[in-house]
Image (cartoon, rainbow, N blue to C red):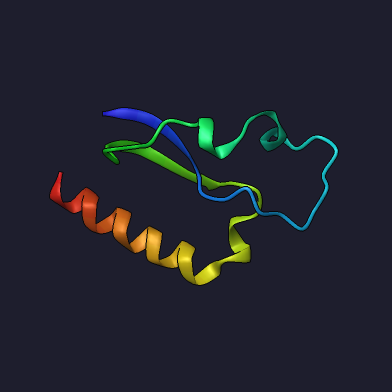
Length: 69
């Protein structure tokens, strides 16, 4: 099992934080995850909670997927 996954789900953000680590790359350049066999999944992005319903759906889908592993 892998240790940590930093799940980048959006580039959208209403903030302009000076030390934002997400300005270093574009979402299109990040590899697609095909399996969620991680001990820890960190949801990040620009600001994922601009889309709270979508984040909730994603969390539920990850939980369901992990039950199958």
